[in-house]
Length: 196
Image 1: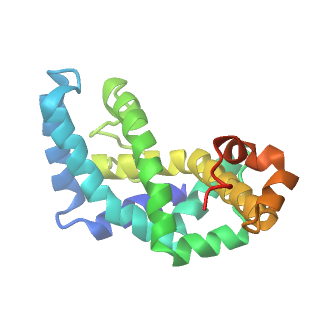
Image 2: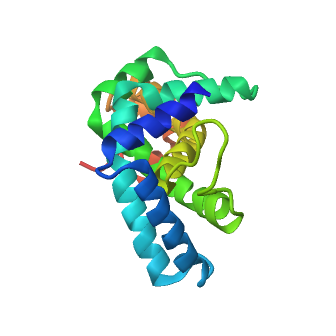
């Protein structure tokens, strides 16, 4: 369970107060939010704060390669096929825009699954005793983001590959577009290529 420890360590390193204080704060907050069923304005404010806390941790983990490595390990432990190409690995470590593009979608997906699993279904337990003990909500959220990473990365990598193939086939000429109507048919139909 080294991956779980790495997630907790990354969050602990990125947060100003100690873990036990965060857990106590989070438990009180969850009790308040439960009154309205984890919905409404107060929940939106909480969710925004949670994402704001987690974002730099997630960016740092993706830049360092830790997030991808943990996601690969977790998938392997559960028999889920997942692979990250070396070029993509290098790009995610070197390009802030690529990291943000992936993390934006990861966070959008994770906020939904986090609400359902951690809060509504009660998956987050401030009295957890096993392994490393309880974690704060930010740690749980970062873990949920790591679970969502596989699906988001796979779609992102596929889109990058399709774009690269299309770019390789299209040299900017209308002839190239007509030679590949399966790829450029919508552009031809719209007349985008024939306009000056």
